[in-house]
Length: 275
Image (cartoon, rainbow, N blue to C red; front, side, top):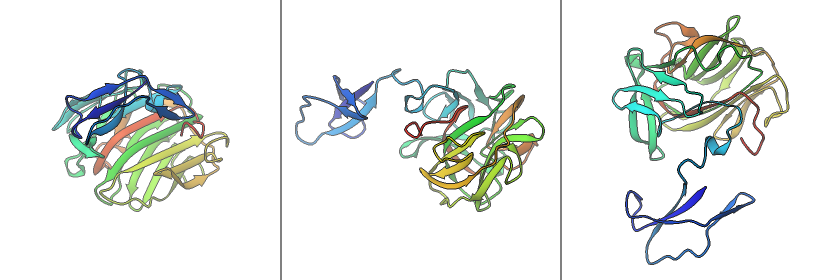
């Protein structure tokens, strides 16, 4: 699955030598008999098509957007295709965000401008009519301003939501259930830094056998910052999934002002190693 690229410059755009024949043991990739000459640059690449999911974790992968694949258009975008294999496509109903080529650690990101009411939607959502006892979400985002913002939202049954708001003032929110703390929602101080990328992990489960040892948790950059033991979840009702706006599906509300580089959704609880 892995290859070592060797080049005389740090772009690896052309002329790189590929060194195969690697092995993997206990999470360590080894390349044998590598010959280097003078000042050269190295990077490890994944063979095209070798990995079929984030970190090669494919089981119960529900949805996967990444800004370096599946995008159509740049300024503005017209679509962003899911890479999970489930065939979802986020489209632009009115005003689309821009694709920034060199944004998150030299990788692309999708830039949403709140003042321009930019958002995407997946028609009929990603949950169908499934019950959602477990939903683990990862996204990489950057907030440009303190405001009441929606990262994503899909209405569920009985006034419940699959939703995250970040930043919402000084807080971060995640719910797979009703919009009440101590029930379907977990929220609290986000500790984010504006104009800086953070990786967020949002987990909800009806059980406590989770990486955090609790039903609901939010992590920022790999550190658990919020937990609670509530178990309200929900079921899909074929409602649209909105990305970048429309909390509760209401037009013109709570648009995102910032960038999203990647969003991953699993309908399962990951192991500690997978997380």
